[in-house]
Length: 89
Image 1 (cartoon, helix red, strand yellow):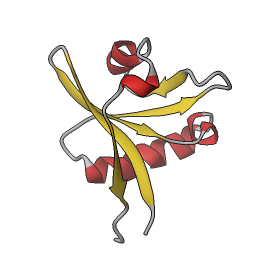
Image 2 (tube, one colour; image 1 turned 90 degrees about the vertical axis):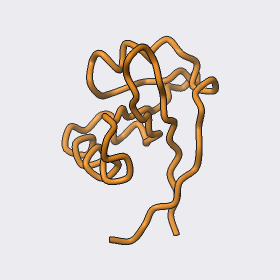
Image 3 (cartoon, one colour; image 1 turned 120 degrees about the vertical axis):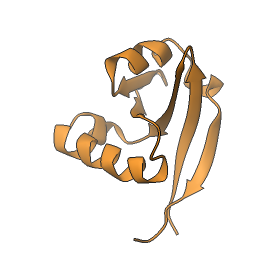
Image 4 (cartoon, one colour; image 1 turned 60 degrees about the vertical axis):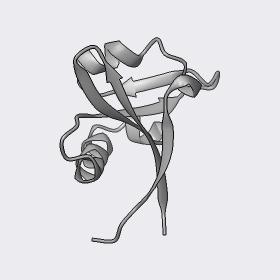
């Protein structure tokens, strides 16, 4: 069974999920949209922000602009990460 890593973040009046993906996903609009769709099934009441990392380990975020601004200055290691199991359809 496959796994993914995500953090449920609560900042200001927002609750959303940040999901770690490969940089290739962040750089491709179609793949990003598909990833958001898949992860939205696991977190149906929360907006999804995708996160990759650059060569220095800094987070690169893609998602709703308001939410990205809330986490873009956080260090990735400071987010409350958990591992989740991918369920079969």
